[in-house]
Image 1 (tube, rainbow, N blue to C red):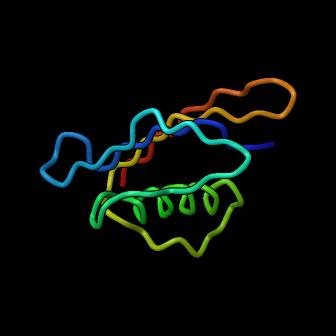
Image 2: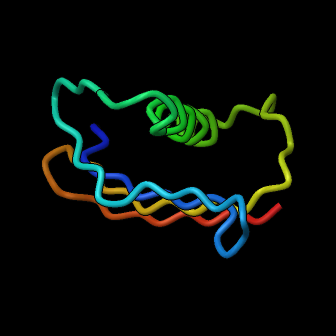
Length: 86
């Protein structure tokens, strides 16, 4: 199964809100951008999601609201949404 598409929002409605809209992924991906444009935040959001899906109990609690919209593909497209309030 491969992650094809991700939308992510952190701290919606707050001054610290950060969002990633319409990120289409492929077989090979290269994240390019200016300094402080969010490249590392994109990778952290995907990494955090991977740890959640693997059942990693070592995740540090963070006082953030997070929301993902995901599309995975294998042979069929699988659409998922995940929203975490902490």
